[in-house]
Amino acid sequence: MYLHLGRDVVVMQQDIIGLFDLDTSTWSKHTKNFLTAWEEKGHIINVSDDLPKSAVVCCGKDGRTLVYISQLSSQTLLKRSKEELY
Image (cartoon, one colour):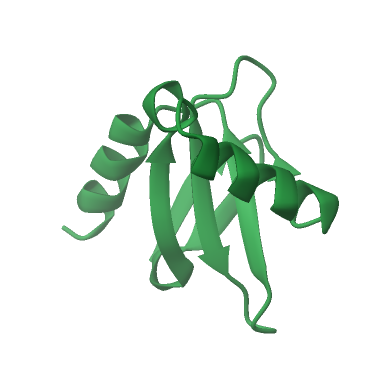
């Protein structure tokens, strides 16, 4: 199944490694370092028109890790992923 992250971007649910709430997780220096490192590598894709609320870490078909920044909250994305299962 697919999960819509915002704009016209969808990812396969099986490719999702982690889903993070940016309101709470960015307080940690480890999360900030992680996001900075992946941004420097060019592996961050911003699909947000507004204030970003979540980060979705995915493993692509080519084995490359991508981080999607979404304006949708982690709770909304989690709810959508569960709805797709039924």
